[in-house]
Image (cartoon, rainbow, N blue to C red; front, side, top):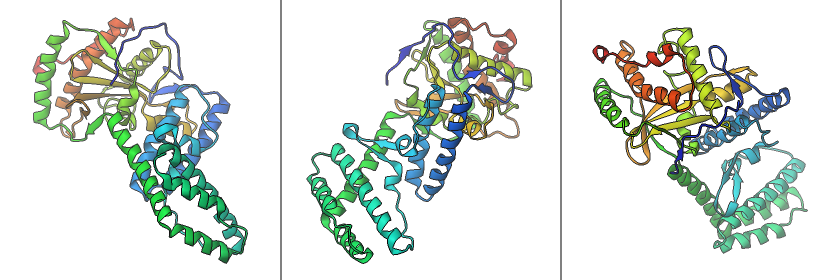
Length: 381
């Protein structure tokens, strides 16, 4: 995975500006705000239709992050969801996610059946063309394209049904379905290989003790390499930004203790955003040779929910990721409802070096009470 040295160009406000709890202000012009609402209404309808198929629903969940990126860049998303929700394959091929959805037959009259069948044939032919681009070695696709072009769709509904059934019962059509299944599987494998993998197991009290010891050891090594590195390819960590963090966010007050400290956190995120020229949904930072990573920004679900509700604010959050191996990462999270202090102290110990170094490295001029918030006394460990 490519890394980039931390940038510190002059401030350039993006889509958010600092504000009070629960998050940061969404700065979208009225036209774009309306467009966002319309597009997200279509998104909800699509997601509902895909709920029965876990693979397609998961694929659409990843694809909707494309909308987040466009909104953050203050761009205007495409006019239809077919383009916005397409799976990209080899040789610049792409197929709308709905192509893979199995649809049940519905009773209609003869005229409606004829119109719907002509439309489905055109869409199938378009799918075949894209699969030809993806897999030019599959010569059966060329044969099927010819059969679809020659299909008689001018007869009665009964004749049309017979022609379609004869075509779909052929071996060449079966191999087309296999090619379509391969396209989806190849796309899923690409997502797995190009995104960090998550270990969802929460931390036990014993895990927290071991992590605190490792953090203390790591901090001694940071003296020699204190610079923070930012990943430009933030998409690699995308799965960790899909949902808002359950502890370190502008929506959860228990960790911060009071509104003032939470407002400092919101301001901290904004200052980080302003320190870089191009707005992005979130940032990922780490130190050289460190095992801890700080994800910082606005969660995808929070932004999309704010836009859908026409809210002027969207939440911000931070997540601590611990590298388990080259591609596996574990969120620093524990379910200690009775006494979360050990978990909170571990979070503070992990976040503190990032806050202090980013403050120095980017000249953020953070309030002292905010930087001191992350200091954990030895007796509290």
